[in-house]
Image (cartoon, rainbow over all chains, first blue to last red; front, top):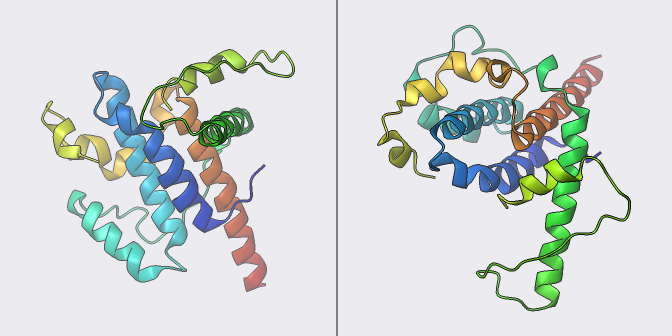
Length: 145
Length: 60
């Protein structure tokens, strides 16, 4: 499993992967999925800000004020440091998405090596080294990348 | 990201990001959490565990 650094969760996981991945869904035609995406985006953003607050107090406070304070204070938890919820723990999701990331990075590296235009859509076929029952749902997720 | 564009469809910020919604993220989805969301919250949980353990060690 990847290292769990506080900076990694914000810059790499949240900004580089999560926001980029769900961006099409946020304004997509599927309003139900878009609503869930917006809700989870704000929830994850707040948790990430609280996580970083002890080491980056001024920046996280400013971001919190400008993005979330207009919604009113969350009095019940406003002074708490976040604690992982049991419902968030998901070893299978960690493993599956790390495979997705591996595939995406590999395809991007091959595209760069072949000097293919990144703005154009290219078809590629993926052959797993071993048959994996979990490849189909993972492949479905690759449609969004 | 353009929240205004999404709001044009009738969504209100309070419905997307109120304190209650932020607190109960993913719980209301009853097992239908998309993989990317499940992954991010699992990463958050693992990171929170690591950071909280580090705080406890440094305090003792």
